[in-house]
Each structure stands twice: as C-alpha cells, then as structure tokens.
Length: 114
Image (cartoon, rainbow, N blue to C red):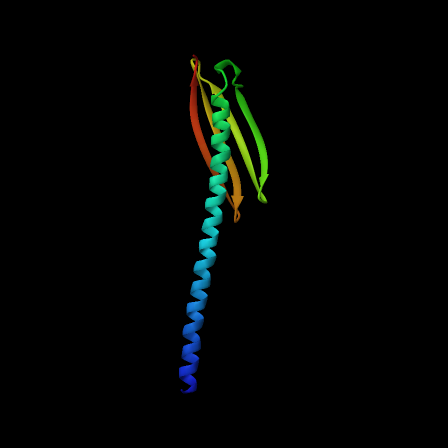
C-alpha cells in the first residue's frame, strides 16, 4: 500500500466515525426531548383531571402557577380557569426549557354546571 492509499483509508474511516457519532448525539437529544415532553404531558393531564374532579362551584376562577424540579429539569405548570356562565373553561399549560428553547404542552377542557 502506498501512503496515499493509507491516508485515503484513514479519511474514509474518520468520515464514517464522525457521521456515526453525530447521528448518535442527535438521537440522544431527541430521546431527551421526548422524555421531557412525556413528563410535561403527565403534569398537564394530572392537573386537568384534578380540577375536573371538583364540583363546579369548587373550581377556583383565575390563574395559578406552580414550579416543579424533576430529574434536573424545571417545569412550570400554569392553570387558567375562566367562568363562562354555565360552564368553566380550564386550560393547563406546562413550560420547560431544553437546549435554550422554551417548550410547552397545553390541554383545555370545560366543566359545566351539574
């Protein structure tokens, strides 16, 4: 083998290794995002079900906010309840930051007078 062939083989191996590494890193990042999304969705659904389980008159109108620290990530859960007369509009939103970008998950529901 000549020196050119050896250098070419090393270059090809380097390209394959770097490409594989970048693919692995990107995949890991997507797994982390989905894990955080799943946690946020669980926090959102949990609060929505908690509020829907209350009697209509016991549901507080207004806005509240709670912070959670789970697995080194901070989630902010915001609850907004609006009185629309014969029903209340309930909106639960969870915010968190991943890789410098703010992400959010939101669920809406309604509770009528029974």
